[in-house]
Image 1 (cartoon, rainbow, N blue to C red):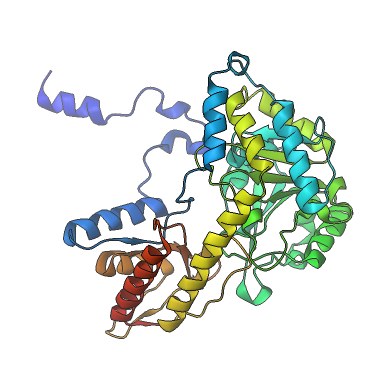
Image 2 (image 1 turned 90 degrees about the vertical axis):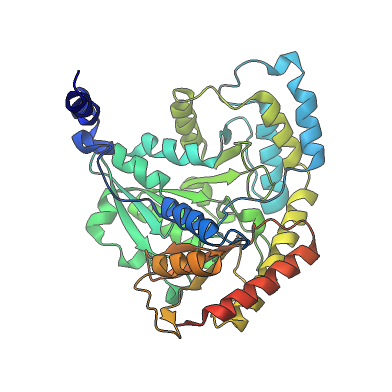
Length: 420
């Protein structure tokens, strides 16, 4: 085979190119040139490290806990791994974890659940958002999604032929969606409203009045509510609030919890869905045809974590301490920001340029400038205004290390000469 023929065979489409489903791009799958936001950040980080090999990156872009799970949880996991009764498929979960989840909901929120019918585990919350649309969405149906936000439920809504109606989260509305602005023709087709409070990435928390309005609207317009509570144990502005505490909430939806954020169990892939038993049953049916359950030893270790309230208390205190330090530094450098209601994310208005003349058309431009020129990593959001997301999950093993990192951050941001 000639070199030209070899090249042609390497670049020609495979015979199955036209067989890809429309939901992932159809015949054009794999041919797009758009670069995902986080890939752009990775490329900018590589460039910064290559250009300034002796400069330490100050990485506020990491969106996952920086510590390992609690010692007691890891020790229990190690013991459970060796037990023969944990070797098989878990399918729709073990009762020990469901009962621990029910105790957690009762103890923290006064929400009483039947562990057998109103709770089921998930292999992390992400698969739950992929599966719940399968329970409700037919072609032409609508899922209401807040933006910025976690896109998985919207992606799978489209996979099933549904549509996503975006609800912008704006600072002037305290980062709550304007549910009155949704057109009636959209409500008539709406099957699911996805909420997330404490909210990622804005850090906003929802009021009881807002949740009450959501419940009333769900009953009036006849849609299901899915509340993402991944950051619930990282609430800073008062007692953590569950959507299911709201009178009537159990009639209209479910809440999805994660073991990652509040329990340092990043990578363990554990969470649970709880609420209306018929919705939990539908989720369980879809799940039963999607996976065979999380490893039983993992579920038992996670159950022990849920029963230990000292774990999320300690994690919350650490991230609140770090958040207060970061807010003080950013304010000194010209940012307008306050300690958020919750989450380990700080959502701050993006600068428009620098005193030396650079201009940023979008937050993404500001992010790239800060990474490449000052070694400061943030995540840009341009969905509803231009904002930068700072995470306090950076690696620092002592408070002294935190303080040193803050001092260096203040120095570099001062040198950046940002303007708004």
